[in-house]
Picture (cartoon, rainbow, N blue to C red):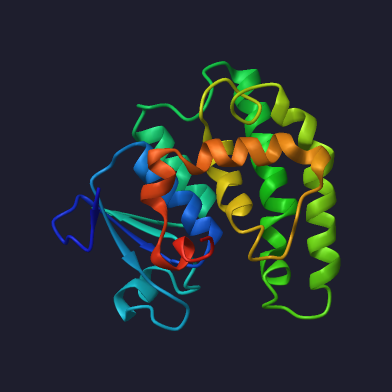
Length: 207
């Protein structure tokens, strides 16, 4: 894994503050790929990258003649191109179940990120309360396996970890009955790929 190394096979333009970029960085480190990660924030996109991705959506992956953006598309590409270690189950039913949960994570939580983070004012408190309640309801699922809905580390864990890491910054405190989530989060946070994925901004979110 390289940072700011122009000789890397792939380049990923990643917002160091964005949980979806964070998710992608976890996948990159989990697969131990030779990649040049370039921090890029809103309003600072190079013109040549904007010509490829006019919407300035991060992360953006450039892999030779391939240019992809949107986190779901990028992590799916990485999973399908680089098969080891696999981050999806082998059987079709389990893969479909995992894709459905990934959809729910994005649709229910990450779609509201601007509101949760306070970027869009007005309903921040309501959105944070709903996230806290949703996680608490799901807590029993975290007791069933070492990882979320799986015995093996997967794309679900890559997707949940950035959100759980940011809970203190969002002023969200889980209740005692959600202890299984706290225990799960601490296991994931200690993982080498997670530690390597943290930007300086993200690392500063927690003491």
